[in-house]
Image (cartoon, rainbow, N blue to C red; front, side):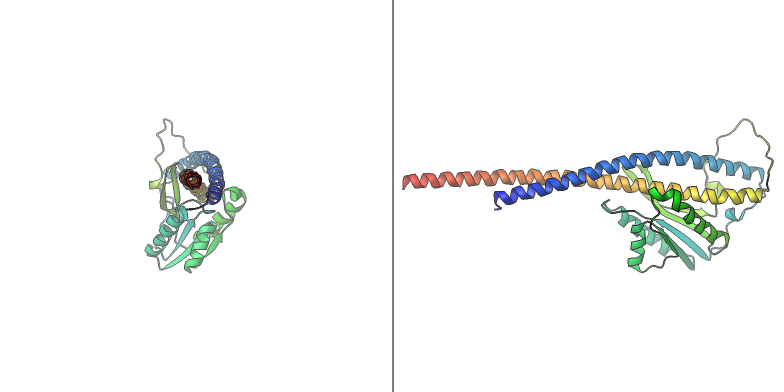
Length: 286
């Protein structure tokens, strides 16, 4: 049986760990709240953007922009948005395994992998999977400065016909307790998959200046950038919710261990007192 001092040291160590996990849980909860607010704002903006694209396309039914026309897929680009840090349960492991499966199942002869996030980059490096581009510093904190470079790189790949489609793999956020792995196509854009626009009573005619081609040339990079922005925000929110759940479980488990150690401490102390009493009685009888 362990000594009383050893048990007290274990209780102290577990209590310190519990304080750390509890603090990390509170930090994840606060960050999750900010991420959910950003998701709601982004969703409203992208919805308005999609409605605008639908309005333009309805006025120009015969107009075909390169970003809206599917072509035979010889080279595909797969963008993987991974986590920033660990201590979030199986979040990174599940995403990396899912991304690897999507890459292997893709039937394109040539594949270009673009990894966003340190955990995804490290996973592909360990598996020996070649990456076309990496963005390890593209996080929620650096979206304003780093997102433009990433979206421009992807748009140039498609516009120069170096790739025939761009797919996105990330963890989509549904709620604080629900998230799911997602694989969607970014380019070419399929307007039929966009949420339908609510009917309007007044339909006003459009006058295009400059040309429709130039308007769509300006809209498409912005649309791609905002889709990436939303995916990164959702991935961050999902990571924070996973970390919050993991730290909650760790804090609860630490409390269970402390209760068990306290019970062992009381048993050891009671055994020590009983032994001392027995020694005193034995001495008095002798």
